[in-house]
Length: 313
Image 1 (tube, rainbow, N blue to C red):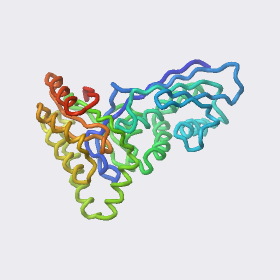
Image 2 (cartoon, rainbow, N blue to C red):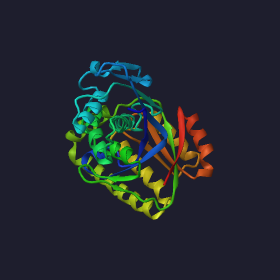
Image 3 (cartoon, helix red, strand yellow):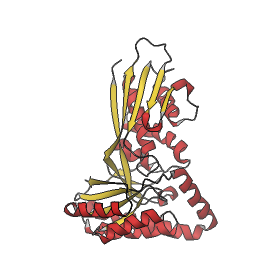
Image 4 (cartoon, rainbow, N blue to C red):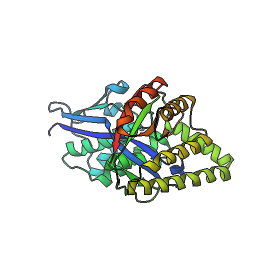
């Protein structure tokens, strides 16, 4: 066995969060500026069932056999064993290092799963296909998010912009003209499962109202898809603003997000919205690259603990 290193990017949702859970489309893109890296080192002289897991970011150091059965890392690794039809992973040390903030809307859980699954199958000298990696990562997402759409694991597995509808094969998006987005991190942890569950409760109490909002989000997503493919970047700003207004209406924004979004728009951003489940986590602002620095500075003054400029396309 040889040492293996595998990485997976983060992601942001450009349009369609929350509505995507209710079978409306969404658009997501990979973010390579943040990464999960998994390094697997063989332990030649250890007993057959010795698999040591180290994840400094979350303070985890444990043998695989000591993790709870429903621990996401264990579920990912056992899924690989089943897929490869092997009883156990050869003795090794698995180190997981991430620069993706947890519970921030950047897909940290899915990125860990994708990197782990790819790394372990490669370490076992039987690399899985993208489709197999995506399938296994989706099973882990059910632990993180209870009723996941599948968008996070898909965009992170394939590392391409995607147009996604739950339960249907996704399609990759051809970006007609590259554009730039600043990601602003509130550093407020907001677990997706909790927010999605609360939106579900609100939807059950007022289905007609929420279905109407989700239909309006769908219309925004379809217009954004066309604008991205045809390179009409100037249209995306207004669509971001509309999408964010609908997310406000389902009560998933927060004062912290609103302050940063307002600051970005006042500083010259073409559009801005929360990204992900909301209530914290990240927001995004569409910008011209040459104007990005003062906008990022304004976002930081408004409370963004970190800003990341990323190119789409």
